[in-house]
Amino acid sequence: MTVRLPVAADLESLRVRMDSHQLPAPAKPLHPVRDGDNIWISDPSAPRVWRFDTNQETFEAFGFEGGVSLFLDVGPDGRVWFTDPAAELIGYLEPGTGEITTIQVPRLEPADVENRLMFISAQDQVWVAAAAKDTILRYDTETGEFATFHTGLGSFPFALAPGPDGSMWFTASGGGFIGQISQAGDVDTFAPDGGMASPEYILFADGTAWVSEHTGEALARFDPLTEEFSSIPLEIPGGLPYGSALDTYGNIWVAQHVVDAVSVYSPATGAQRTVNITSEGAFAQFAVSGAGSVWLVEQQANQLTRIIPSDLPSTQVPPRPDPAPELLYTEVASPLVAAGILAASIFFVKSVWDGRRLEREIP
Image 1 (cartoon, rainbow, N blue to C red):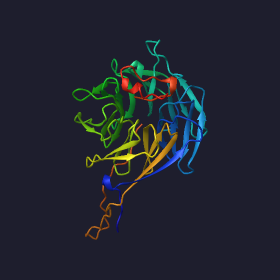
Image 2: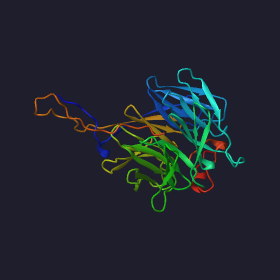
Image 3: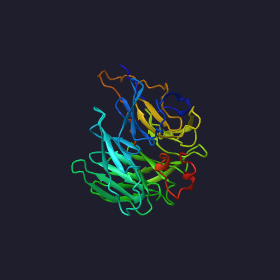
């Protein structure tokens, strides 16, 4: 008896197929999350959330009273949560009915400065990064109350990701560090010597945190157990590493924002590869894993692209000589959904400290 299991594939022999799906209306699709057969996509150009049915390969838009949708996450109950920095609210969509409920976020002090809501992470409670206030909010879905956690002056908290131990992790793109909010509410920060160059996305895989250094053209590795950092320069000159996702072989695919290419890095071997995007000026910033594929949102091309990597390594496991009916199983890593921001037009201007980012804002 034999069994075929996916193993780490050699990047050079990895075959890549891309299938692109154009949105049915003008939009600025940005951030994808996956829930079963659906890919949900935010739209910083309008108050709506898009759904792509991966079986039917069709799009559907869900509108709401507000400004835009910026970042998304799917909660344990299947609700699709989003941030709307233009109207300073968060909201959720009930997939079964399509009904959207919005929740106003209180203006934090100083009140004359916008909160600038960024990433959202929907766990038992809902977490929201308020970048301009150097604060992360926690929304209690039972009581409707917000709790605040301060991340440090000038930290500009951006991306959120739940850690393996139930804590909430964040990137501080202004402060050059990453941080953790424990279940007890304690805030701890971590940075290598010299800090990080605009850390703006964090992905956990097998307990390790992988952080995209947006202006550092690198992927940083952080071990929460040893608190040690290492940095992997990505081999795409002029690229701006952003969102990342895992493929079925455990490789990390990193969108490069202003370059029409994706970096592929193998944690198992340390090898890298560049995969070109066929669209010109795609402005791909975020990706999500699903069904053995990596789904990449190309904002300027107004499309969702499915990247299907495949390889034919020798993965057959021979039967053991012992006549007992036992099988050897290879441990493999499962894909995890990861959950400067480019926002829509006048709704969002990232930060004055990052001159390089301002030059690449959407007109």
